[in-house]
Length: 400
Image (cartoon, rainbow, N blue to C red; front, side):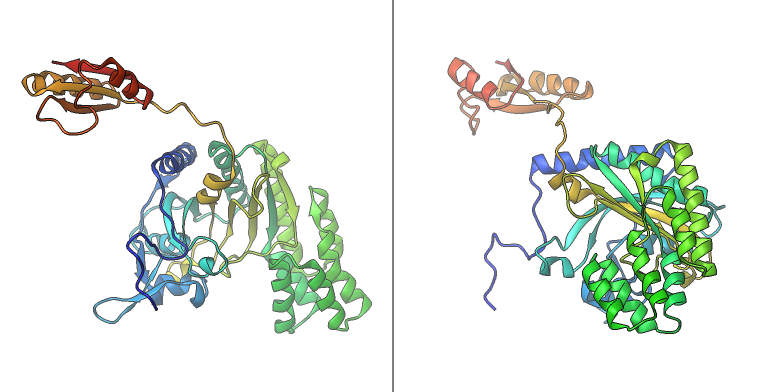
């Protein structure tokens, strides 16, 4: 393998130029402020974790993990999500804090498989975790907050698709009792949105007419509140029915929040992390084909860290919003240029300090024979002065 050139970088990672950083920070800032208004406090966790703890608990398959060895030969991972590290913290450092606990975050995560598909191996997420509440109110809260967060990020046209892992598991167990491999195969088709493959797989299973109709009936369970009633008629499994009852209550709370117009129920949904146990959802923006937000309930994850408490949450894919959503850019504040000669350096720098205290952006430059750079001859050159103003300075103040 040839040695990389000095300007090359690994596949799947990117450089963020100043205009992109400014926009990403605006998205991050607005979303975190939104989350703070809902009572979520910001947390930061390490970029690197132990493979045997957070790496395993994350439910990210090994081929998606960036692994490395520390100087003692212990296998480490770059975090593939933030949920598992937060579960570790809640089960240890925050174990004495009363429940429920509301936490928010903004961080980069790493998944090696993304670069193989031409997508980013490092990307940013902004999200929340609500720990210690298993009620429909909690699930509805994170969905409603996801909606408000997307709006804060500048996403105006979007839909939230909401499903429930318990319903799907209960229905598949009812239709295919003890046939775990067949259940997992059908789940994979649903995860890939391969509905043609899903129907073909049902045909290949050679089921009774009632079993086949029950499994194909899932594909019709998409819409509003009426989907709950249709799902109740489709399955008599206790887990499936209790899951739908929970989802109906979540919908009622979303109506009370005044955001149900943004939500549709889609019972074909299946979360891409195995730790999901209940309500799951994804947010889709009109301009982007892949989800810009995703989340759900994961009541068994914290048990892996020794604390058995329920939890729910979501993450917004800020990279996708940065790259794919058009929004009105605020006018960028242009800096003031303060030029000074060596003799008047103190006066120039004191003026700059005063303006910065007022919140202004100030650039300083030395004039005269000792100065280097493009501002050297601008003191008495009106053409140069006009050029500097044209190049982005709001105002030029000269001390000479």
